[in-house]
Length: 123
Image (cartoon, rainbow, N blue to C red; front, side, top):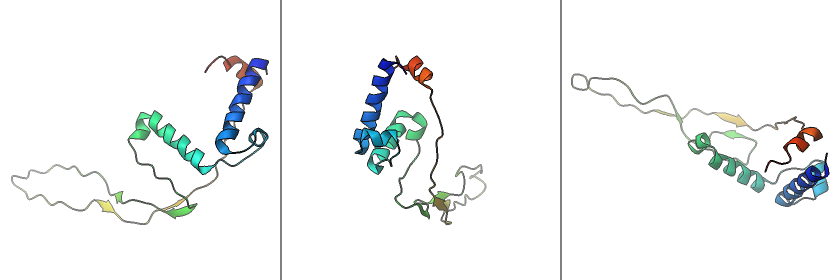
């Protein structure tokens, strides 16, 4: 890795350490992300993506649990000539239990020093 790239990489590592309240050496090895930092990163990602702004996302504290809100059975729209037939509205909520299980996800990705050097000029 070239020296200018190393400086940029070191400043990135230092910033990650600062955000998570750990030493830079811990970032280089292995550490657990502080939940509040993770929540801020998720919120920032939601605000930057047009699709994610349109959906509800609820953070959870427990690894295993059940859904938070009421589900939907399907679309509400339908075709009916209400001048000749009575409309029969019905409930569309789905109260069935739906469990979730949060699991650790490993992201195994590597960037070579040559790639870092090639992209070091990008902000």
